[in-house]
Image (tube, rainbow, N blue to C red; front, side, top):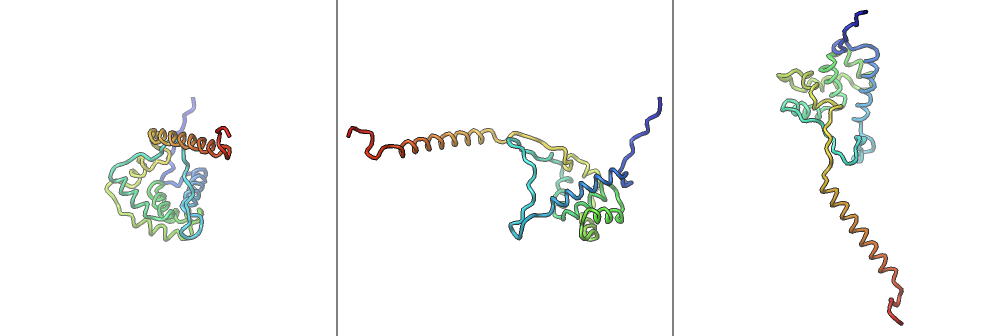
Length: 180
């Protein structure tokens, strides 16, 4: 029976061509999502996916994850990308610059400088970013407020009955229904 080689980790080595291709596509998609569409104050970010009847939200983490989340939310999309490429993929700055340039970032050096503004922690950044809070595939799903849905349904039924009564009253003959 032939020996099966062990699975290799792509982190720290830049991965193979398939990993680099997928990383580039994900990075371009994330950067495109970070760009607002529209003009001036009417600029809107693209809508996130929604599931009717469910509330989707990420799992909550500890204090370190919350602090890192707040600090990363203050960065631009390119700055967050630079931080993650350094921390998770363990790429050197030259490779991060190259990856960001290929993804369409206008100023990768500024993105690296912005990523440097995130303070160091006791726990390594890779460990924090590997937590379930930052995992895009790990969501909690709960039904929306069932009582609120029931109230909306009752209000819609009352509105329908009121519209039917108004329609019936408007449909009366001009002289009324009495004997004339």
